Image (cartoon, rainbow, N blue to C red; front, side, top):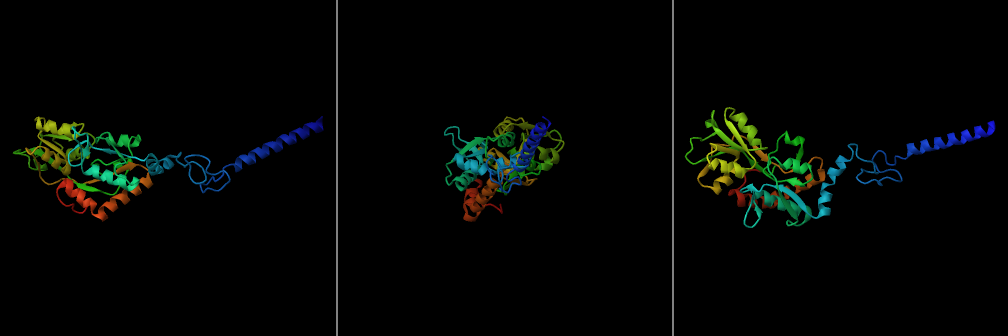
Length: 300
């Protein structure tokens, strides 16, 4: 009995040792280089099949370009209320503007066809949440590149250079930022850099915030404020809508626009930058700029 018990114990120990060694050696391709017989069997993995060190988040972001190509459609967040950049025609339902043409050119670059695109409305407040919630693939919506925003999204190369200015009713005593005094009511849009900028440049002003540009412009025309502030390019579009209003003074900030991509989507970002470069090199960018802005670009 004693001998048999020792034999049984030996068999058990041998079995356990084998199991432990197998467990240690089962991490095929464990360094992510693809070595090992079973590497690549897990979906959403790097190299030989192991998940990215960040739980697969980088792998998911890097597949953004592939997802778009598989879907066969580019989903872009754009403004529907910004004349010259993205404005929806209530009669036809068409959305037109500079940003729209840029978005279509990127669809052509990525999918070979500018019609393979879906335009979704965003505002300054909703665009980043919609991007990070995977409702859209990118943002092409008069979005200024800032260090704070870089913490949340990745930006393309600059595709438009603007500067913050003021829109007033013709005949207004306000001629520049220096005329914004205590008691002056300044209208701006929630979530835009314009709000922070005007509070810094004219700390004594009263700033009223609205959900979108059309609401802000309507409020200005209704006498709810003395001036409306945002990027000059957007304000020029409002002045075109109503010649009773004009843009005054020199821009008091630099507002470089970029196309926002979900963080870590390197392949998609590279494709966007390649598309922008192609637009510049071919001369199509200049034609699009003149079509909507009415003059040649100055070093975008």
